[in-house]
Amino acid sequence: MTEPVSTPEPKRRGAFTRFLDGVEWLGNLLPHPVTLFAILAVGIVLLSGLFGWL
Image (cartoon, rainbow, N blue to C red; front, side, top):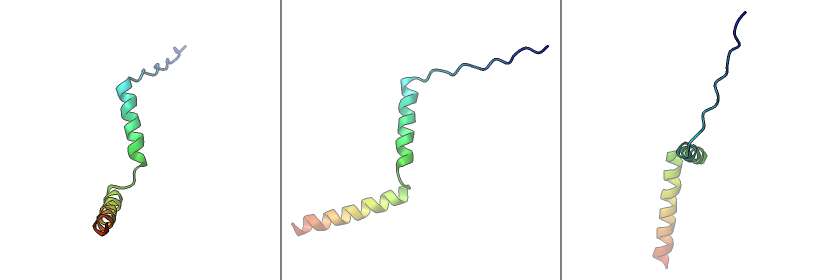
């Protein structure tokens, strides 16, 4: 007879690991860095034009 295979118990995750998982999840929601750069660059140009007009 063969012995039953025991499944390993899931390890408890620490607070820091859960924090890093949250950071990863939020980072995955962001668009590509080039897109972020373009959006921020256009925003700066628009704000500069608005403040220059004021």
